[in-house]
Image (cartoon, rainbow, N blue to C red; front, side):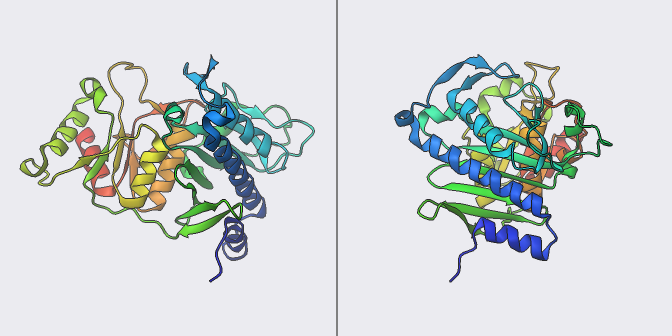
Length: 335
């Protein structure tokens, strides 16, 4: 039986669903970059890529060597193809300008080059998250692309996906018509479709949250988690299991595979910040994927994809996964 590679799937989308050819090429370039990152990650200590740099990113977090390597791989792979007007990365202060010697395209690429990189030294799954937006009409302005071009709500995404580097390397992708999963066949060097029309069960008995932050949570989150932990004897009437990898890619991948709820709420330690995760690089693309798979995603009070960004590195609280539980914890916030 013929196997559907990522390239074949994208070509068929161009023929049947009017997916623009330049978007198809862009996704293929991102996928090739993810294969290169996967190779670097798999080398581990043998490749001299473990450990930290002596630098911090814009969020004040110490960068791992693989953070920097992954960021460079994505920039170099995508800057010359003529599909992009600009890029933005969690690891960079400002928008990345396409060098003047290369043509510019109609799209913007936003990415977290290596999500969960704090786990890389202990050989736990990490990943790359990306989002594609259309570049607003600049009325012939060929100068530097400003931050404002990227500040679009998640509903404006034309594609989003993530690669997870674990026992297998997988690419999960949505073009706005459902979610497909592709597994890297290392012998062929190609991503091959292995998961078609992924759906998240509406009900679940699994949740993911960092319990060590419990004392800092807001009241609605404490109430909800207390009910989960109460199990069959509590108001929800069933036992729940907790699973926490501390890498968003890994936790969301588990939810796409078998259902569940992922929570990263705001807390009282930094009250001026509305959450920990980044809206543009993590919350928006993951929310797009989760919704396309039948799940839901909110910040506790509103749909994440409806949030109007105000800055490139804006943070947000995140509740996403199986619809029933997302709606329940959101209702507790609204009460």
